[in-house]
Length: 244
Ligand SMILES: [Zn+2]
Image (cartoon, rainbow, N blue to C red; front, side, top):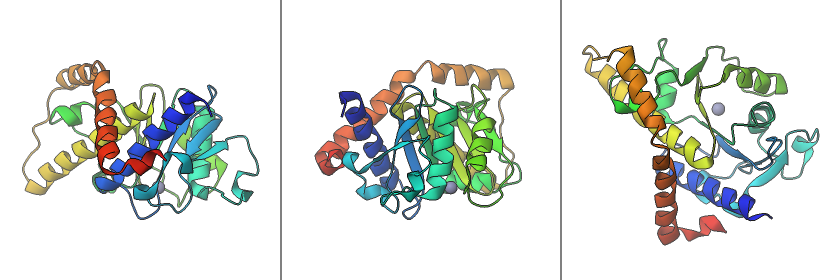
């Protein structure tokens, strides 16, 4: 295994463990993946039925998006994970990491008729113009066609896909970038929903302020790297088996 793949596995395993700590996972469902090959065809993903809190770097499956027999393997991935992530990695090689969760706040927002992330604080402004919407929930993603349909919704510049009546999917140029984006999306959704719960009117900032703040977030790329590095340091002290 290359040092790059080893380091990718450790980063992804750390993301699983941390999402479990944050309660952003759901049972033994949901999936995170990272491209290994430059064309995105070879990618790492969690094994079927494994709780996020138990995922280790060595457990992650390495699959080939072009393998017609992936679901026939003895250690076959979850079918919905396969159809979604294999098509996303094959069609979007720049998306080095794809994360899909039914995290509580993002999912609540996805169940509202108006799922817009209104720019009301710095975290919500981070997502100004970055969110694509999948309005067409039609059951679980159990075909390649469904994966292709979802991939087509992520036009350039979009990092988040809010999936109506379902959950959220994030793409990033690295595990750290996707992890940080999903973490902040959940935080932003929590703030917006807390504001809705007050029944008071939102204090929405003008588009130009939201756009400027979104750009400023983009210039803080190191924040995502520092974020994941700190999480790995905490896990190294408290549950180092994630590297196994
Ligand atoms: Zn899902």
